[in-house]
Length: 292
Ligand SMILES: C[S@@+](CC[C@H](N)C(=O)[O-])C[C@H]1O[C@@H](n2cnc3c(N)ncnc32)[C@H](O)[C@@H]1O
Image 1 (cartoon, rainbow, N blue to C red):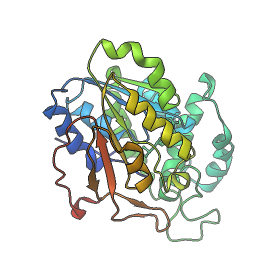
Image 2 (image 1 turned 180 degrees about the vertical axis):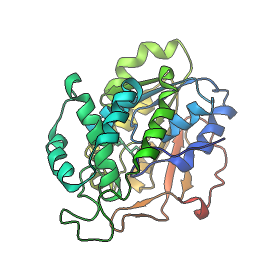
Image 3 (image 1 turned 90 degrees about the vertical axis):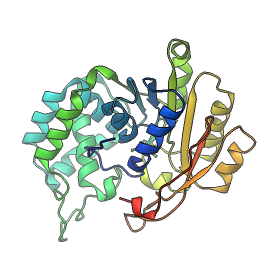
């Protein structure tokens, strides 16, 4: 399977899981299914599986207005998005001018482009790709690393144009994951679906994302998944005893991965990732050397 880079440098992105999930899908005769990522983020898993023809259709759901708007623009207003990126000054003045867009709570149609550009901008100019963080180099830019050091316009434009080639097979929704899936129920009967849940981390979610889960939200998700009879699914989580408890007693298996994200140092480091599924999980062959 070939993998490319993604325009978003997303905290907790699951690039290392792409071959594993591809294999899980093939082993279970789900080749050509509709794949749903209800916690899309960088959507790296679904996009790679789609580009490699392992799945037929991709549905992305994201609660964050800025990330949702970015993906919406990638797939429905590619040229305008690329033009905006081309002419965008990547400096602290732009960062300050865009800052109020972080307060927008609803992605109204007339604002989508502005929000989409801001989503990419904050993702690529902020510390560790965290939308609510400060810019690389700080507001004063007194550092060797400047705000534009991860904003390579030609590369980003190229990646976006490349992704737009699969736009007919991608749908993007701004919604809460569970609300969306409840509303989608009737469609599960028409075709085979696979849902890949990658909810905000239990322990560090509040540091990484603008939308994160309380204990109650994690419980609600576990109940939703337990009661589901419509689709096959996989969940990835940080390996926390509380989460193991929520899914214990189910017909599911657990596998450790070394994919954790250290917020304090802004670096990936070795930690454990938990995989839970209704399907039998193939052995995990990843090692620490797989860390990007
Ligand atoms: C662990 S990240 C997903 C990372 C993604 N799998 C990737 O590879 O980049 C969790 C994502 O869920 C989003 N999110 C948080 N609460 C949500 C909700 N209630 N419904 C949908 N998405 C939500 C966050 O904004 C974040 O983008």
